[in-house]
Structures are given as C-alpha cells and as structure tokens.
Length: 172
Length: 81
Figure 1 (cartoon, rainbow over the protein chains, first blue to last red):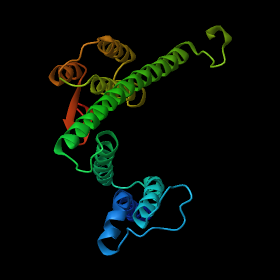
Figure 2: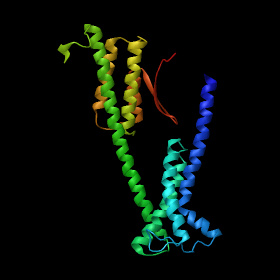
Figure 3: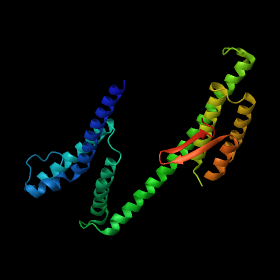
C-alpha cells in the first residue's frame, strides 16, 4: 500500500513539473513574436489579410501565441502546477497590461516607470479586495459549518436520550 | 490580534475535540460537554476579535491548548497522553 502511495506521489510530482513548465511556457508565449524577431525578420507582410487590414509575420505570431497561451494554462491547471509558477504568469501579463495601457490610452510606445507603479498599485488593490472577500466568505462558511455540525450532534444526543426515531413526525 | 476566521477555526476544532472526548473516548461527561459547548457558542457570538493569548486562555479553561506554527493552527488536549 505504501509503495503504491509512493508511486502515486512520484507520478503526481512528475505531472506537477510538466504542468509548471506549461504554465511558464504560457507566460512566455505573449512575447514569442519578440523572441522570434531577434532571429528572423518578422516585418515581412503576409498575403492573407482576412480579418485584418494588414498582417505581418510579427503580428500573426502574436495573434497565434496569445490564443494558445490561455489554452495551455487551462490544461496545465488540471495537473496541479506548482503555486509559484503562477507568479510568472502574473508578471508576464502585468508587463503586457502596462504596455497596452500605454499604447491605447497614452498613445506612446515608451513604457514609463510611472505606468508600472500605477498599474501595480491598481492590481495590488484588486488583490487586496479579493482577499478580503475571500476571508469574509471563509468566515461565513466556517460559522455555517459550526452551526450545522453542532446541531447534528445535539440532535444525536436528543435521540439517544429520548430514544426518538429519526422518522418521528412530532419533530417536524 | 487574530483574524475572525482563525477564531472560528479554533472554536470549531475545540468543539470537534470535545465531541470526540465525550462521544468516542468517553473521558468527559455529557454535562461537561454541553457546558463547554455553551461557552464556545457564547464566544462565537462575540463580534469583536480577540488576541491569540486570550483564545489560548479560553482553550486552557476547557483543558485544551491552541498551537500555532508554520503548518497552521491546531488544537490539542493538555493531557494528551
């Protein structure tokens, strides 16, 4: 039995490692166009522009990788990746988010330190609020469990003392 | 100060141990069990958050102790042997 448990643990660790790798890979994918751009010329135009006014190799790599990333992440999460691997995702998409905010709202391609701080503070605020909500939910759940368990035990005591049948209609 | 959630968790663990001692181990009487449960229920109803020391003192008054370490919060009997 112990050997069987050990084998299961070993398999779980293996799956967890692979899943963690997939999570990290999905964090790298949004930057795949930049990575490929170091080795190849990705400014070449692609003939097929259905769905876009103009499409170069760089953009098409980005579109593909950004679509694959959440799928990889979803598959990886099924195999319980290491908790810390999710931090890579947060950092990766945080950088992405800051870049997009700069592009869209400020029309600049020069990411400033203020943007990173601002978005970072906003994200921390969201995490704080979510954490508070989670705490409230956990508290309510615990109080509910306490009441339910206590009531069940008192009912057991009552039945034991008075020899009351569980289907007794007078208790309803 | 400890979180409200931790307070409820400790009280829940205490009530579990009390039930185990009364119903399974039969080391306490039914009267003692109900009396201790009433104390726990009153403590649960208090809305304010109390300190860990205060909660530990409460547990000791019921012959249990609260242990808080890296793995989390647990409750054990004072005379566990």
